[in-house]
Amino acid sequence: MRRWRGMIDVPLTEEGRRQAKSISIDLDAVYHDRLQRCVDTAKSIKSNVQFESDGPLPWDMGELFEGREITEDSLHLARYYIQNPHGHPPRGETFHTWTERWMGWLQNLKLGFAAVGIVTHNRNIQYLYSLYKGKFHYNMYDVNGPNFCTVHFYDNGNIAPWGGVGTPNGIYLIRHGETEFGT
Image 1 (cartoon, rainbow, N blue to C red):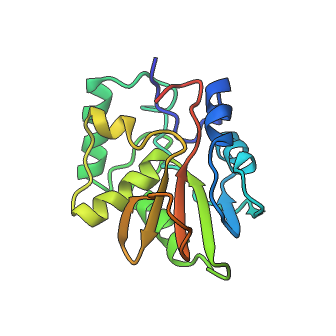
Image 2 (cartoon, rainbow, N blue to C red; image 1 turned 90 degrees about the vertical axis):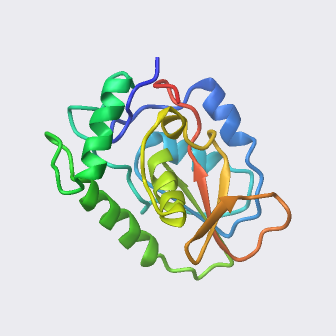
């Protein structure tokens, strides 16, 4: 059953640990947040890297979402908060607050290294794709989002799946591995 994760600290499954170990990219540093799914994914990356724990947390969607099954009704409610970005889900943060926090963190990232990885969350990656496409919305595909442990290259507002040919300087967004809450 697929459930909203958000700030709930859901661990990786065995498959998620296997996915994380399959990432092989030549990075100089990897950032991750404090949630175990990102910590474990970051530490499994096959690369000689420095790990930093100060990373971007997901959207705190509050008690209306977190831990609950993903359904068309809950997707409709998520769309409401996205379309009304200052709406405040109970015990959560507004969509606007989250986007400001995520983009502020990304813009203040010090790229003192050639290639920096950020192990992060589906919604964080989706938001950057949406800026490039000009619209953020939810449908069933969006909830599935990028496959677990996929790597996306982000450069000057552009984002695309990383093709695996060389590792140019820049930012690599890596979605954490599969969790017990599914996709």
